[in-house]
Amino acid sequence: MVFRAYPDFLTWTIMHILGVALCFASFIINLYICKKVLITHHLNSIVLIKAILTVAFPVAVIVSLIYHNAYGFDIVVHLIPLNHAAIKIYSMEGLNYIAGAFGLTNVILITYAVEKRGGIMDEIEMSKLKKLFHSSLFVTAIIIAYATLASGALFKALNEFYYSFYDPAKKTSPYFPMTIVDMLGLVNTFLLCMYYLPCAQIFNSVEKEKVKNDHIARSTKTKNEEHKEKPLFLGLTTDTIEIIKVLFALLAPLLSGIVS
Image 1 (cartoon, rainbow, N blue to C red):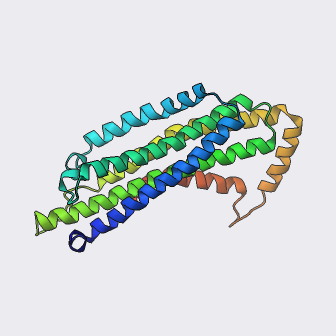
Image 2 (image 1 turned 90 degrees about the horizontal axis):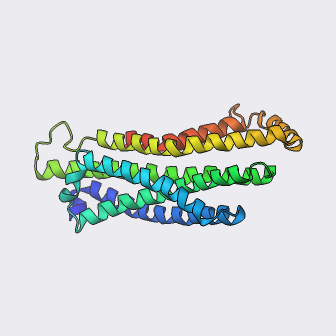
């Protein structure tokens, strides 16, 4: 009956269920990447703990401050016509950020591996690490962007429910401002950039230093650059396409907040 009267809640519920499945899929992917980096590059448990703490503490502080101070989140769970709504909402939000934090932890682990073995890695090994590096970013961006989109769906459902139940006249301004979702998207984009950009800078610096000091690597790099200069799609080179993909991943949470 609730879903018939308020179809936006059905949309949010479906997104909620899909979000859980998406988080578990990301856990599997991130676990594979984490094990591969730890075993292949012989990183000890101390490095793993450092990476986890580097991500977990700042993310926990920022997220708790946002959800504590953002207007609406303190009363959202009391208006949802579902059993144990508070547990379901906050558990889902926590699951999203844990899954995202796992991906960011992998980004830091891969950066450690590059710093540790940068001078002795060949081009193939460096290329594999670069793929894992970007894969970790993309998986994290998908999870966080989807979480932001789901928050937008929840706020739409709550506005529909609130005005039909408490205010049939329906005021022009929403009771739960969608600017809150935009703010969440902005903060989530900031979190991605806060970890990815410094790690990417270290990654690129090690890669350039290796090419500079290794004559064989320099020759290989030159050949690769000649290949990359050839347009692949709409006049764009491989490097340009890679930059566009990274920018889209970093901006995905913000875009999701705006679209929602």
